Length: 377
Image (spheres, rainbow, N blue to C red):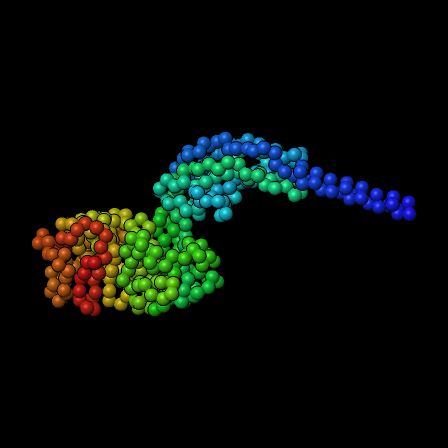
């Protein structure tokens, strides 16, 4: 009986030691005190430049974090959308030091991913996460600072849907729209069905439908309409063929253009040149405005037209001054029985160009060679 009593006491003692050890282990894995970001200060800013991608985008220092057990502490620099709870935080750097430098190109991509607007100062939030090597250790977080970043370029986007046969309504082979300074472009076959744009591949919640762009003030090619289905996707109504799709966030337009070449100037397009157009009377650079074929017989482009100024339609573009490749002025269309919008008149200058008399602003200029109409909407 005494032996049984002794064994019971021993077991209780061992259990007590074990509980103390477990409690002690939980205690020594806990952080002690707090730590903070020292530099940069909250609200400091940087302007990033694509010509210097390896320059520092942000250089951080912070005070050390202590845990009750001696172990290696690892720090992770995290970036998240301004005002968020860091649910979508991006890990930019992991180190055992109390300092880190993030290159401009890495910060640029992270800020864009977090929703920064290209070429506009945008706020992002940054904090440091500390973890100890002790088993059971809980992470500890520094204070959060807001950093103001002016980014460059833009993120690529995606499109899926039955209207893009190569993609379909799945993520096996989405159409990728490549971004260059706020302009997204892709070349693909379009048929008379629906599709939608997405900011993140594989994420259905990142979709942007037709009403999204209308609300944002975009002018959209007339062959792209609201499908009026449950998701209000885009529907392509033009002649099925290969087209270039372009989303220009700088001037807020979405356009399609018949595409017969993989690169270079499109022979099916015509061109607008003149003081009424953004590029003026010049072929240098990209001053001329492409007036593409958006479906059989219809040429259309959204552009800013300047009140009281003139322009002409040109039939070709060889990459240089293309005055001699043929053009059509106001009388040519009149003599070919076109009905012309009242906001367009004969300039009665030496070349009888078009003169635009409407208000200066973004308009959709369309030449319908089937119905023989020229309109400004």
